[in-house]
Length: 419
Ligand code: ATP
Ligand code: MG
Image (tube, rainbow, N blue to C red; front, top):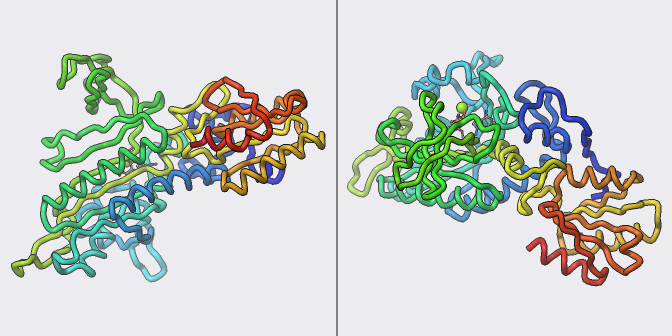
């Protein structure tokens, strides 16, 4: 992609009303624009990051044997009445009546819809276990949309659901999801904690939340640096910044975190209320045993930025960087510089390495600032001085170190740095 032809509306100033670093940077780097509170457009650069995250999620979900499908966003309210969640969801659920007088909701989550699907299409233990997932837009009329895409009214979620004939099966699927979630968040370049919910509070059902430490995070946890144990900090405790660790002799510190994922053993709550039953090997009818597993896909974009930025802008972890390489032609009016830049650009494209070429007729300072702001992992700087030595300059966004590399070596060096 040539920057001169692309739609990357970067901003010099910090936009008014953007509270968190991630929201400020997402706006400034031209990743998103707000249409109204809680509702965002993903610009080309933002969509690229979102797609990279989705790809990681798909790979890890598919590796567990889960199958992707796509459920409708429009859901009949009757389904929600059957599980009692119509009232429970209250005003968070967006509702309307269509011209056929059908009461409809815009799905805030999909336990009801998927259980209905399984009820109609699974009848025997031979069809179990089954794990299905989707990556889809959810709608929630949040009381307080905040921090850009972190708490939005329209957002992208990955939601998976497991269906088993016994609790041993559920335990196995839950464990597989736990591993997949760890892989996903690691591959996204995140430091994160997994927080076991207290089974007492959850009514005997196991659940685990994945929390990303970040200054703007709304969820408080206590975390022990010695043993890694983390637990939710209830509101009344939060005055205490440090408490003894319950698992080791260390101490736990109060930290702000963002919830990026949640896995949950549901049991038979939905299958019983919606009548999703199967015949076991003895011919007895039993409710299917379920688990549900969510990831805030669009929220992840912001969470990654919260942890990966400096005073100049975003510092994308390689795996999610919208482009892997940015080529900066220091002076785009000089034919020699442009020729070398184009050559490297073509070679990277041949290697299927995602690259953007800043070919704009702008001052070098503007280009350097923009490159740092949008945070592409690897910068290739082509200027007169280095060219005279037969070299170009390479700089990883995450380090301040500049490397002079011979023109003939550049492709190999880039591949090495990206691997
Ligand atoms: P929260 O406590 O932050 O409201 P939740 O418990 O309502 O989250 P779930 O219903 O478990 O969230 O949804 C699964 C995932 O979707 C969450 O872990 C979170 O990452 C993401 N998510 C939830 N609500 C929003 C939102 N309003 N905007 C963006 N992402 C969201
Ligand atoms: Mg919520």
